Length: 424
Image 1 (tube, rainbow, N blue to C red):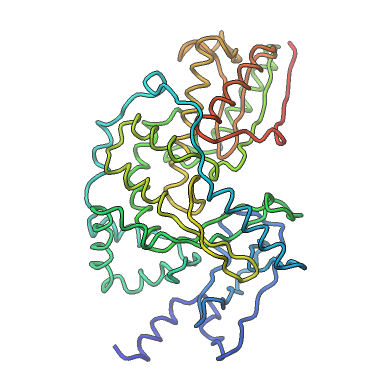
Image 2: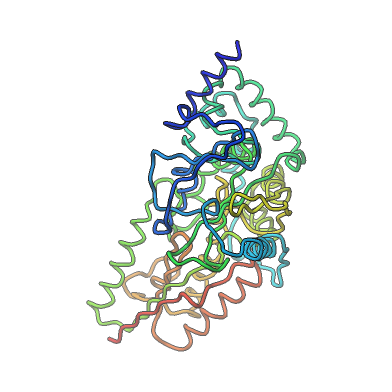
């Protein structure tokens, strides 16, 4: 294939207008203008596709799609060095510091093993399976440190397919090799319009393509089993379930409590740094208790423990640091792992309700599952608790949350709690 033909094929992969506006030598690309109104998590992948031009410091931002998302590439700090260093120090301390469990859960009393239904997770990757992942992947996602976008794999899959499948099966057999390729850029997404502090930003990881594809393969295999592993109190990131079901369940429960004039209290809790604070020892113990194979657990742990990241601020790439806890936001497997962790809390709440440590609502109407009534609903990073308006339930809820935090590292953000009570 001639160089001109290869360049023409590559130009077909570029976003609209990008191919027509060739990058003059020595000239930096211009930026589009964005604001901080939209805080969509998918914005850095969907609306800001960054393509590398010659130098790792230079990127061109797609112009045809005008969105209102702001990421670190366009955040301008008046005192650049001060803010960039403080931001990088914060996320390094958040993700680069380990957390050891101070409590251990008696797993036999909380969850049961499902090893019989998880045996298909360990099979080698077939060419057809990898091809399906590549074909169904979304376009215009930002690349990681390797600079490869998924459109590149799609365009040249006939030539790359056998080699990529072989590499993935090598990782399948030798998961220790992840340490050589498991790097990522961290881009910061504002959580609110007036984002100033480091805590006001959400870190989204742009991973190397090979690790991302491998994680997607694991996620695709695990997803069909999630309904058997997780209580029906969760719906987010679940096949066959909708987050809308959670809102409907909350609405119907509130209506039933009000119409029956029952004493009730509804509290909305928000997890503090939900993905970033989970301890890896807890994840390992939880996966073992659920019956995952040692091979599958080794894949997950090597993906977590070999991870390194660099925070990008104002087009400047910081020094890499090693992860020591948390789940990467942007990795396809992370939402499913978070659901499995949150399900442990869900089961602990149900056990407390069945033992009458926590008094749920509508106990006479819902006698199934131990007779504790309706106690909670989980969706995304939020937890809705239903209980009788009595001090015993409140104290037990606080105690349960504290114990779960000491065991897993996942804690409740008390600054964002919302409480609603009804007296019958």
